Length: 128
Image 1 (cartoon, one colour):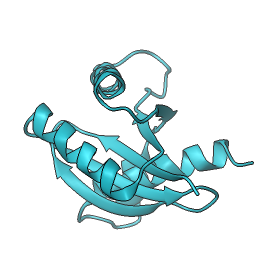
Image 2 (spheres, one colour):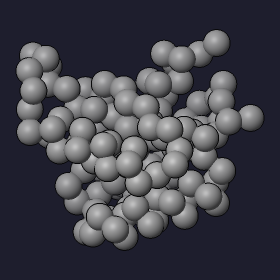
Image 3 (cartoon, rainbow, N blue to C red):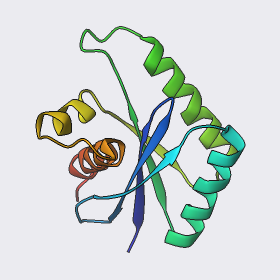
């Protein structure tokens, strides 16, 4: 059974979630985004340890649909992932994923919960 890694990319923190194929996503952990090489090394270790078949990154499109700085930064990260990691990388629209959990009162490690919402969105869109 395939295992997926969801990523909520941020300037300071990277939220991660895991899910088995045909399942729901669960919060996994938060990585600090201090150094790109360290981040890529940490992600590669997680991919190997968890036997990840697909990475799903949330793209923060603006509500208006216009390009924004956050989207460009995240797309650059996706391009780096695709060039540095051998696992396929998919993307989904992640509008308001963090806001959803903030409204529910989540304060600690909100990034991994946002990654859970991103991965659940992907799973719902690609359910057999």
